[in-house]
Image (cartoon, rainbow over all chains, first blue to last red; front, side, top):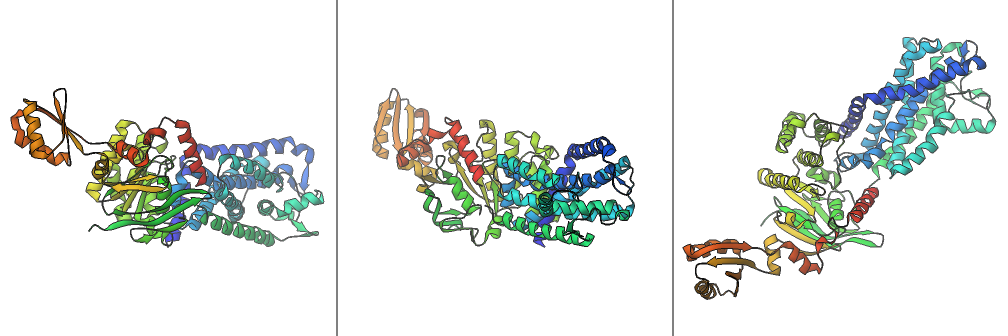
Length: 262
Length: 327
């Protein structure tokens, strides 16, 4: 009961901060929309169709939703570093609440923010000539949640060990861009060299992007956008399972690491 | 016999080769203001961090409100309030939001939460600013808000680590009024560290800490009497006659400086009314002087505490930065 309360409070604080900072809400949508617009209209013409009935803009759109989720959940997760820098973390660390619960609350907060930001991208679907049915939206939300939990807890885990802003910036750059660029947001993973393909398959974000893409482009497409091992494409459920497993491990590590810091 | 709310026995904290706290023992009584006085780096903050469960001791034992600081961390945390050296507010939230967060974390029942939040905000004269975002607060307001927050869950012990560091003299005085008022009204035990002598005077008892050791622990009055007794300076209508009487009645050593008689007594506050009654209208003016804590510190440690007080801003900054990174 105490722990549930702690999780809620930590989550609630992140919600208040998010709401107080509405400019950020708008700001972090601008870049993804810019990417979508520039790439789909700039490259779309020369690339043509990605699969029957799916042009480049439509291929890119779910990737952009996924990128928004990755970006926001990661940033919200590592915001623990800022709490440390500005002293507020101390207030949390001396409080009579379980630190593992703090880590969990932080991850859930990151996930909630990421889902909201991802959802703000959805109404832009007509830009690429797509409409999202209520069913699609209903499926996208849990998909975004899974991805956000996996990446958000990774952020919390890192932040619980990072002591300085400088190290934080270095690690963010080193980790964040590969995470996004090697996840299939911008290009299909089916035709890439073997070694690169291996790298993308250990990237958890890859599975999140694949899930979001398959859900968004729904069934006319079959398994073109599925991740495959040895030529056998995974089913949607298998994608979910892998992402879920990664998220679970990350969240447990984050809780453990957060609890043992002093 | 007063009840002890903090008990510390042979507490040791080592950071590698460096011994920050070197086997100290002391007790803090319920309801008193206990001051830890010492220069920067003497081990004050380390001791506080151990008592509030942020740092594990290398050896020794400590209990707060009868809970062990190592094995009963959660109970200790519930029993204490804290105001750190560096601000620990969420400056993107309003004053009210900061306090509500704290109330929820410390499980203040929702029936009394509103009333309690209002009470502490009014006490610190921040009620009018309750909906302002903390980022826009002045240093003094932030510190007051932290004090209000520290009190919110009615802690048994309030720890204040250099509560007035970096505040202007006016704000410092106001803050002290709040602290003394707090002890009187709520009966909260207050444990504070400082390296300002004038502030240590406000404490009921003072522990002087230097290089990780407690070199003295007593009331400010008694500590000062270690150095010298209270000094009375008096001018009378007939100094020669008065001096003779003073020597005779109080067995005091008297010296005269211009037209003023100077002598020492044990307890100036009690002596003064007696003296005035007996000498009555012959007194032209009279004053009482206490030896200062500066004198005490100098005598006990052979150094002035002032050596790193403000004059060495860079070192102070480096120390605080270093401290922050360690946490």
